[in-house]
Length: 339
Image (cartoon, helix red, strand yellow):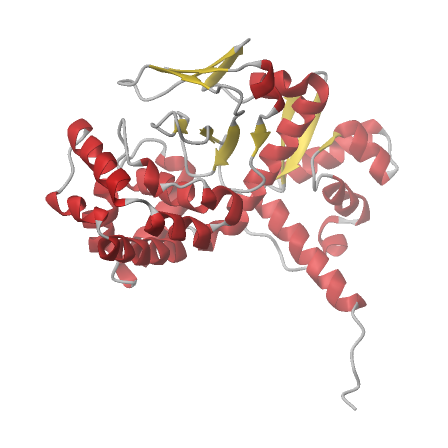
């Protein structure tokens, strides 16, 4: 169990990440390769990624170099998921790994060895040349295992942010904390989070606040830095649903009809049934029928939010909407005569 202790200052500084963190995506996707647990949620990703790793000649390196340091266990080194990647992206995160002081790398690798065991070669990670080799492999793995799924990841994170934003508007930060899912429980001033069974710890934020990072590939339990002196981050799992079929390339209004296309646009940033009705100009009962049709088509997902139902896009719905906007933009862009 992880107990996160909040003061009023911490509540004021609590934030939700605007996008997925690419290095946490690497870490948690590597965890998916290490277990059959929950594989249904990423079945297509697992099959395709295993094949791509083989085709790119990366399977052996992933098995011998990445999995031993990104263990799905009570601990893996904090320097592998630097805070910079959350705010600035993959390149900044990989640069931060390279810039990690050798003393810190040695200490964290030694801790990994004590807790879960580590191959002898990991001691060389204190040397920059060894970390450069690791970074090259991380970049190659990301290109194969994470980058092809960025649309799905983005859509799920955007849907999560829409749902959490409603809770923030309705109940403030404490409402957001109370709605973070079955793996966490808010009892002021402490957030109780299910954690690795062998870990029982308290994290005092001491006025620093907390950054919550929704993670597409994470299942069941949140993860945080082991070092309490690092910026407080809690990476937590998203709910998953069975995958929907790929979207058609037909124009959105032709595919769905004008009213349902308008309803899908209304759901882009999250909308209740009543908000869909107002956006489309129909009755609430008609909006509910449109939402049901979109949900049955795998384009939106719905969840109870207090007395209302909040609808958000699925990855397929988000992809379809982006394609429709791109088509609309192309049609409206003036073309040169080439003179």
